[in-house]
Amino acid sequence: SQRIALIPAAGHGSRFGTATPKQYQLLHGQPLLAHTVNVLCGCAAIDRVVVVISPGDEWFDSYSWPQAKLEVLRAGGASRAQSVANGLAALAADEDDWVLVHDAARCCLSPDALQRLLDEVGDDAIGGILAQPVADTVKQGKVGRIAATVPRDNLWLAQTPQMFRAGLLAEALQDAANPAITDEASAIELLGHAPRLVVGEAQNFKVTWPGDLALAAAILAARHA
Ligand code: CTP
Ligand code: MG
Image 1 (tube, rainbow, N blue to C red):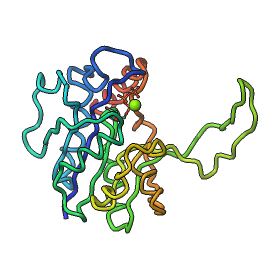
Image 2: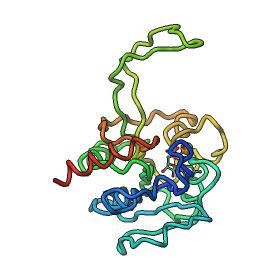
Image 3: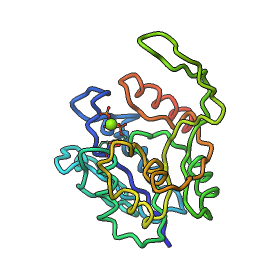
Image 4: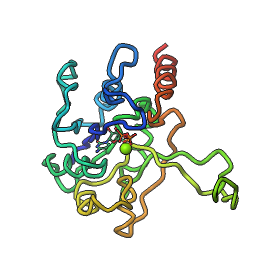
């Protein structure tokens, strides 16, 4: 069976707030998406890397991309889950191929964290995700005041990649419009399964707000220094 990376990159970046979506903002002279693509294409254990962009994307074709492994689908949908479901449907994957869904906006994923996920999930019956144990004290709010302090042991922040067999993932995403599906794992959980948690890394954050670009640039600069 193959290992296929599927990168949803069809968002508008409304919180980032620029006319050019955040996945095409330049980081060290390359679009953010290129850094994401390079980590996945550079992993010898991954056979195919498939990027899902919006049908109306005006930016992808202005850049040069790796020739080996990389495929692009103009199949983005109204939500992240829909973009992933559309991409998966167009992939022609075998049922037991592994699909690693990874946010375009997580451009600082390290090869080490990616390899850790592959190593720890490769023989799992269900699949799993990178996630980060919550480090801060967690408060539940109520109209601007603290209602409760939530015990943080066993609380994790979900990251990507999220790695599942293509057949199971397609079944889980049949109802991609369900608002409870905010990542691939939540869809798998709705089928009654418990995906594995693999320790990620703080650096594997999702570029979301304008100030996040400078942080991503610093992380990448430190890694390539
Ligand atoms: N994404 C997608 N299709 C959508 C929405 C999001 O492929 N309809 C992708 C984004 O391009 C991003 C990833 O899913 O790589 C994670 O989504 P998010 O960080 O929320 O990006 P946006 O939806 O673009 O940003 P925002 O929510 O601020 O609008
Ligand atoms: Mg979004």
